[in-house]
Length: 167
Image 1 (cartoon, rainbow, N blue to C red):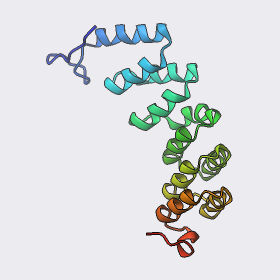
Image 2 (image 1 turned 90 degrees about the horizontal axis):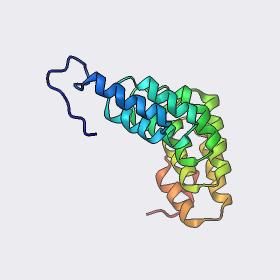
Image 3 (image 1 turned 45 degrees about the vertical axis):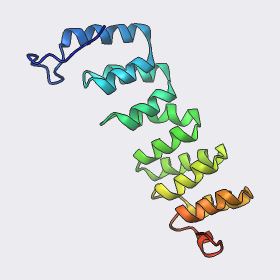
């Protein structure tokens, strides 16, 4: 079914609400998180229903996409699903949206546990409350010279900048 904006529609989305209701009903019936996310992304129409479906399916991938790409998404509702996934990509995105320090520390611990040096570096460079010294030590302990250089170049408060010749 191809849906087009209706210039005569009084709905703020510009689409026929009856058609959107039908599509939304089918998505809910099919319990498809991907379609729920894409519907929310494309149409600003009763997003709470699509958010609820993703939460019910406990789909970390689309919870991640939702907080990353949908304005005014309820981060706290998606937080548990993303934390349980332990995937550094999802965790890092969640950290970018959270201000509560204890939650930041939990995410930092999970990213360290993942052993993803890329996300350890990104976390240190982009998350204000990151424990840079701790993350730097994890990178040093990995004995990965390339990642240590990347860390020193990209993390402002890195002590390695003073010891490595980075150019």
